[in-house]
Image (cartoon, rainbow, N blue to C red; front, top):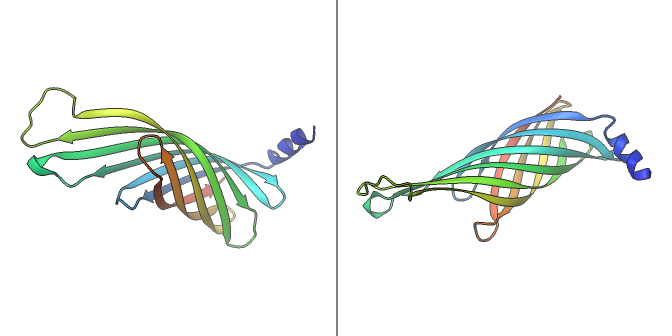
Length: 172
């Protein structure tokens, strides 16, 4: 019963968050992302935000011998939960955990290869999970910019994938 009371209290003062951001990676891949969230005052001194994040990144490699050109296009969709300190100052630390799927399309073209097949163009779905730390810079109660550092693990690439960026958020 106490858990139900806490859950209902947390939803008593929800706010919707809309965000748009840029994301980069050490391999010079850049992209954009959008965010839709529901923020709740879950604990004394902290808030929980349930988020849906969409991302789009693309990368191109240096052309190889024979003019071989490989390009990747990633579209990701993830669900996240973020916990943030409810401070009244201009800086709010955040921790976000999430997971989802990446739709990756790879296009390969070559100057000297003429083919009517799609053997050089492949698409697949890759599950992932991620952890992110950020520091939200609050300009007023309704607008913030959050620089972040994110670590993700997908089940296609070895090791962890690091990215960084910033998201501008509007609290409705």
